[in-house]
Length: 338
Image (cartoon, rainbow, N blue to C red; front, top):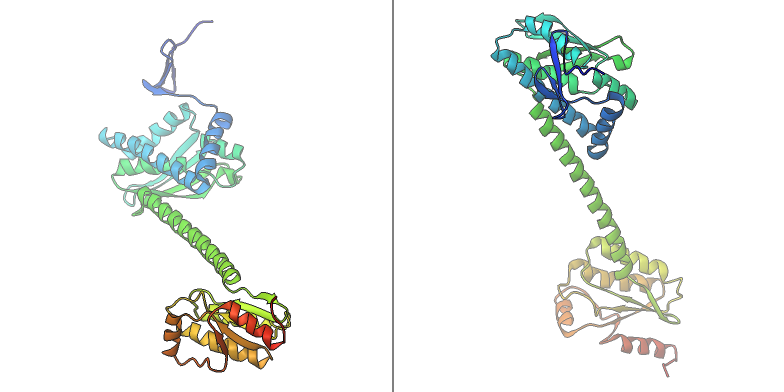
C-alpha cells in the first residue's frame, strides 16, 4: 500500500514522520485520540480524581489559556476578527474540533456569538451521559477573543446541542472576572467547605467526649445494700454540676439508698463556685428524699478552701476517708464488716 506522508485538507497540511513516530498538523506536533473512548476515559479520570466541579474548572482554565495563545498569535500577525471568523472555523474543523461559526460581531461593544455543532467536547459529554455541556471549548474561544482584542472576554452558553438543539450558542462579551478569579473563588469555596467539615467533626467529637466524660466522671456506685457512693472528680461547671445532681437523685430510689456517700477525694483543689454549690445542693436534695448524706475525702487543703466559702457542711457527717464513711453508715443500721 502506497504511503502518503503529506496531505492537504482545506488548505491545511498534515504530515507523518513514521520512523520518528510523529504526526504533524501545519508542521506542529499533534496527536490523535478516539473521542468517545480514549478521550472520554481521560475526562472521566480527571473527574474521578478531583471531583466534577474542580474538573470543570480545570478544563475551563486550560481551554481559556490555550485559546489566549491562539488569540495573541492572531493579534501579533495583525489578523482582525473578520479574517479570524473566516480562517478559524475551517482550521478547527480540519482538526476534528467540530463545526463552528462566528457571527454577530460588534467591534465597538466587543460582543459576538459562536455556534458550535458536533464538536469533540459535545461528543465526550454525550458519551458520559451529561445533561450540561463542558466548559473547555466555550472558554477556549473566550481565550482566543481575549488575546485577539487585548482585553478579558468571557462567555455565557445560551443553549447547547446536548439539550437537543441543532447547535450550541455561546455569547461573548468583555468582563472583569477572569479565569484566575474563578480558580481562586473555587479554592476559597473548597477551603470554606473543608473548614465547615472539620468544624463538624470537632463538634461531633466534642459532643461524644462530653458524653464519655459524664459517664466516667459521674458514676453512681452501689457498694453495699442501702449505701451508694458518688465520687466527685475534677472541676465542675454549671452544666456538669446540674447533670450530676439530676443523675444522682434520679437513681437513688432505684438503689434503695439509705446513705449517699459523697467522696471529695478526687476534687480539684481549685474549687469553683459550681463545685461548692454542688456539694451543698446534692446533700440537701438527697436529704429531702430520705437519704442521709455522708461526706468523705476532705483533705486538709480542701478543708481550708471550703472553710473560706459559704458552704455549711455541719449538717452532714464528715469523715477523712471512704472506709470510715462506709463503716459509719453500716454501724447506723447495726451492721459491720467482718
